[in-house]
Length: 109
Image 1 (tube, helix red, strand yellow):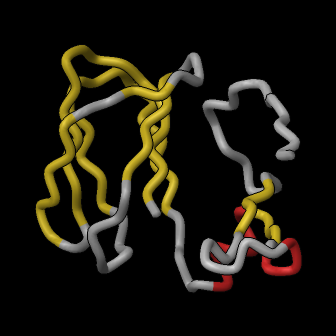
Image 2 (cartoon, rainbow, N blue to C red):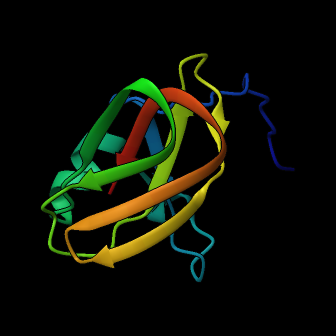
């Protein structure tokens, strides 16, 4: 029988958070491993860029210099995830448009 745990909702991940990795084919306990978010990012060579928008704006222009098209997560000043329209200008620049101006942080990885 499976053991089910309930954890509180966490809207903002931190580098110490554990990620559980498992072999979906094996189904054996010895195929399951865990790693921190930080160590997993380093292991696969993923750089994260953090952009702080201190002045409220409905359009954020971000130069990240990652030389790729990263995934984007935006958190407002109340630490709530916000959805916007992401436009990849090129491999180093993005523009995020929102329905209203606000300040917050964009995490690109």
